[in-house]
Image 1 (tube, one colour):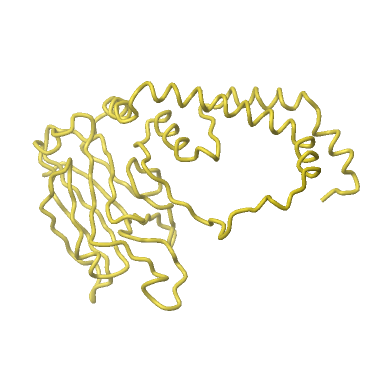
Image 2 (tube, one colour; image 1 turned 180 degrees about the vertical axis):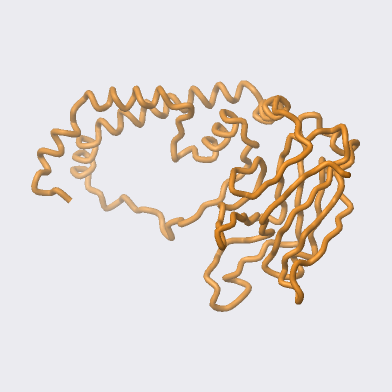
Length: 269
């Protein structure tokens, strides 16, 4: 902290040209967001980049208590405003850009825009997901890499979706390998394609059982054609488990449903 040169720092960062430079950078951004409208910003990101519409978001590392600014004196507030005038100017410009972008998004229903984006994607009859990349869908937690292999939890809700641009002219076989925190969760797995429940087969990879199974189901063309834009896979379990609440000594406070290692789709032989 360079307190000894505070006046020099103030002069350096009070240069009006810095605001113009920052504004030019903001003009180059595909999307501009603000913290106070975080949920709206996520929807704007989804709209701008063709992601599945974000309905909710999960908050982590949240402060236990809100900041109380009542102790800041009027004199201190005035000094802060003076020292951050350029920051305020840039922030106000960012808010203006965000409001313009958000208004343009509101002119087109985000769900319609997403369907249009997905309908333009090439249809595939074969794919392999290693969960090392983003997933178009709801309720996926952060990517993990246990033992050097990518995996991903679903949560915090018990229902998770994945949207895929699948071909509709031939039966496809869906397979995925997933685990859960408890056996009752893995035993409750149900899978739907375009709101139709699939006839699910499974086999265990360990003996005795360790809460991991490979699942398999067939996607019939009639089911695939129920949604012309994409196939929506929906995975349901009976509950999401919070380890810290389930077992003494555990510190993981996330609500965890299914743990996906891989998912693949191929034509039925």
